[in-house]
Length: 115
Length: 113
Image (tube, rainbow over all chains, first blue to last red; front, side, top):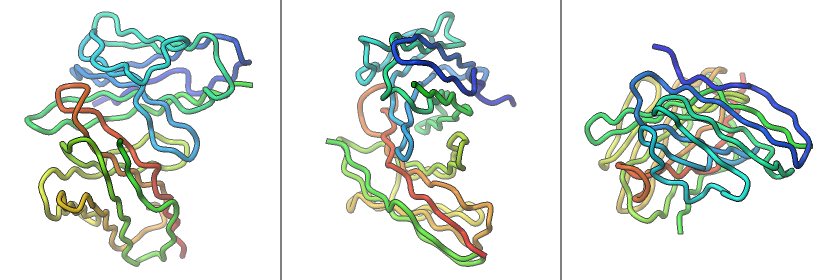
């Protein structure tokens, strides 16, 4: 079974530029998450989708971050304009609910460096 | 507020046993997860506890006490490849159907020969 795919793996941009990340979840997983992981910290949830609807975006900085999941499969996360503090790894995860248990599976992440 | 505490770093010897503790204070509880994360890689799922007690899976075991807000991950017969960060995550109420994961900062484990 193929895992969660993300691209690009690395991105370097200057502050005030725009950047977009792409995620393809595990086939059949209805729930998709975007996390931000700053060096030395645990992942922090940015947004959660259920199929193509947003379930929770309470921690998404909406003045500069946006995300969409058209057709309920692939998803893109955009930052416009980027700030220095956005330097982090952006992780995409997908999950399948099996009874009362939901396990999230993570992609390899995109490492963003904002100069 | 939501708070998950775990030690920042630990060191252990190859072949030994190590216990990584996690304490949590969250708004509600709907399960606790342990993930392993090698440097530069994505977190990978290790274990899940929702009821009190010990869950064993090969060399790894995880324990939960909901009344104490406490969990630990036990790694036996340590191998060099176990050098990684171990993330404790609690599913708290809110968000999607099962609630959202709140992660601790992770414990960096170094296994030495």
